[in-house]
Image (cartoon, rainbow, N blue to C red; front, side):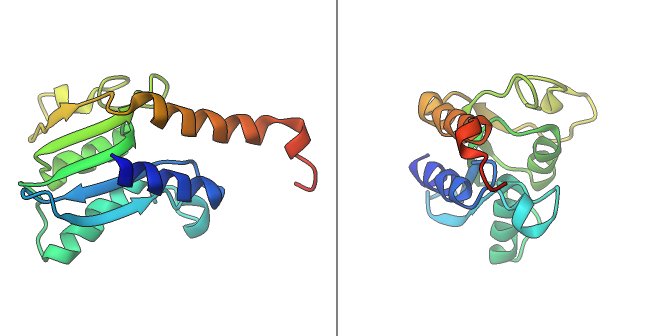
Length: 151
């Protein structure tokens, strides 16, 4: 989770919503890391999870990541939850829960649908306070009128 948190901090420094993701293989070796790049890429789907999953699959030359763990700082949205199922990730580990936009424990609960063909093991709340603090600080800073000068 520390690598994912570092990726989230990098995203915040670049003005991206601070979410970081890491894909590890069955032996724990890091295959890919990513942070949100929605603003930089002008791509609404450039979520950390998707970028990390795509990079890990490309590195392996495979479409499925059946022995892999995806660690992410925020509960994945419905788009990312669907991608996790499609990549057939073995385990999803996430930090902060997302009652507003989450798609795993909140909202549509993608993995609970009969049409979802793969359900990973899910472990939520890992380093939840630190993950949530990074997000909270980012949004508080953006909302603070003293930080709005020049925008």
